[in-house]
Length: 318
Image (cartoon, rainbow, N blue to C red; front, top):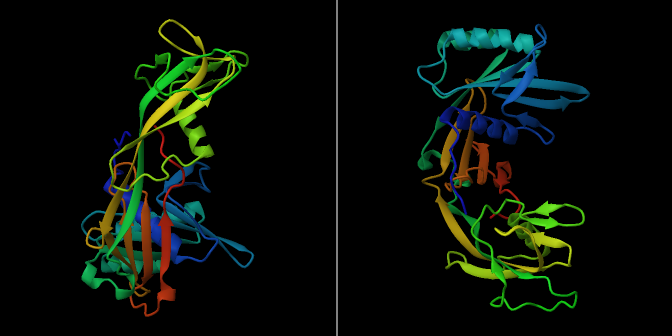
């Protein structure tokens, strides 16, 4: 149930947000990578860029780079000149320069000359968001689990019967659930308590019937083994017949409201302005859980909304 996680720095979050906006603004088949490394046509060395866009127009491959700056004041002509040189050296068809503070008049003129598209990414309020995008809240269900007990019964015979969970021979002391403490004495294969947990998830849904936002539920699963499996103990490996794994399970429902969601506008000097709302989990380690809505600022029809759901698949580890 460990939830320790260090959030990405603000500049990196800014770059990733831009990449998501560009990905949702493009047609199907568009590939956006952030960050990316591109080989310089002059030196042959790999250069890092904040993001790249790759697509195909007809039979032609199109390659675009994206560079971002989340800093004050407005970006000036110096940065644009640097990007123009880098664009040429990397062989990009276009470069998109994104700023959180906008661009000076001279920077806009230089960008137009060198074929660099400017974008201004800014935060907006709920009142400024198109009504079509406004959802009051979304819910994220988070599944949590932890080891309650790992008990074993020593091997007795091949005449197996379901063991009584209260009638065990040995309880394993608290240990790293990822440590491979079980061993097949014939093949030498090893596995851990966490491996048992994943086997259980593959065979059944351990969370079935667990109430959302209710008290943790402890459930026990039995793993029977023949004579050729042993477990590490303080006295050395011992032959086992059954492993009884007890886990504490809980489902916490997190509500993310429109007021706390990220709301931004993405605009060019003369182009279309996009608005985006991202409802993202605040749970440490699960910030990538997102439901996003994006549409032109002046959208009048629901069909103009691009909705993206990012909920990582799979169950948690213990």
